[in-house]
Image (cartoon, rainbow, N blue to C red; front, side, top):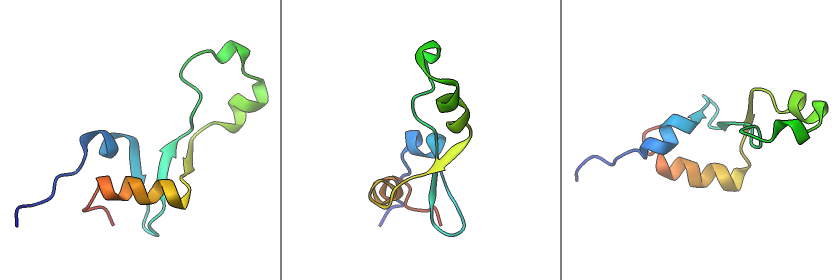
Length: 66
């Protein structure tokens, strides 16, 4: 069998932690920030862990991640 390929878009956007959780950037911060509340902007800093259902999909894109 040939090696499986990793989706290039997935490896740029997601990271799998040592415990197997999937980290992703917070959504909703690309544009239109003037209409967002300061609280929303502050709470959407950094990264977040994906839900189990979404993580399962992302892990299928990255067969060689932990």
